[in-house]
Length: 468
Image 1 (cartoon, rainbow, N blue to C red):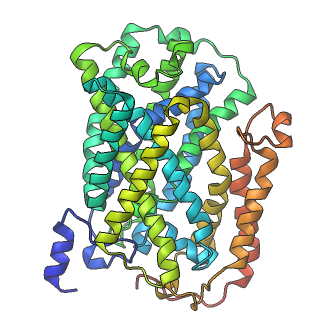
Image 2: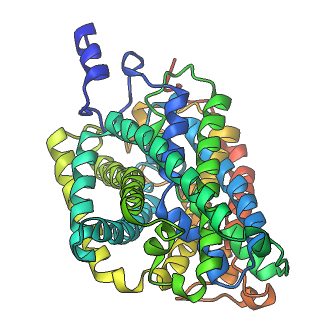
Image 3: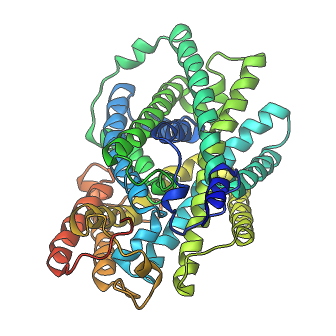
């Protein structure tokens, strides 16, 4: 590519690349944009509701806050480690899974990731639809449709616009949250809520699991938004920028959710958005808060739609043996993805809170083993040195199906089953642990150790690095 083409790539708001490698001449962005993107993505209503669940489902305020913070730190570290891969590889997150699972085999976790994105997009549309309905006096269903149209429009633009939206969302989020916390402290007796300190392992570990699962769910696409950074960007600085943004943003949201649920009691269910805005706000300020809630959801819902496109393109490109996806194809993919999540939101809006806990916890059964395998391979086995051409070549060194990686992944899913507690299934160990789901801990540790022990001896010559 000539210099004129490179300059156009850097200036254009509409992204022309998709899942293919980002050349050094097209790298741009800063660590600050990573921080603001993930701060803005977490200062939003779904994170508030996730924190509220710790109280809604039986925890007290004090220990719920502590448990949520511990989960943020653990899960945030996992996410930040994935993010640090982006500048070094210049590739979307799930493409690198072909190293561990094979060019065809990587489709196994990727399909599950697509389902995750659809679920999160649908739940985000439900809450945003409530906010839009309150803001412009329409039905919740109409609010969902309006919100989804905005997401489709922004996602088609791609990477650069997503980062711009993230910066705006972080500013609006900070202002809105500062106002809400001020109202919370001045109008309510927060200290009395903190005095209730009845520790119970069940509710405490539930809080840890809720926030950890929230963070780890970002893992499959976090590197998609750091892959344009220059390859010489410090991995530790990338880790710190993303980790700090996502932990601070999510913890602020969940703290607000805990207090809101504790104050509202039984009224919180079914009125999540109205409860948050109603922490002392009426009239014009309430309208501004509803607008802030909608904009906060725009960031993460756009991330979900963009991530869904990247995953679908990754699966298709594996069978086509090339990484290129045209802008027209991307537009079609995005529209189909947003339409599917909108349909789920319209169908499931009446039972949102009852199913949300089970949804986010059940997801961990499938994503923590993938995360463990990917991180162990990148940092301890191949140490970030991947053969770029082989990633799209079924005949290359990574092959069609990597039996070792797939087997460890399946074992990682199965070994969690005794510890899983969901609406669909409850494992035999759950009762022994006081009704707490700790499957995500097992799913991180066991597959990670197992993959290291089995893969390390089989590593031969180090492949040609992606970035020389």
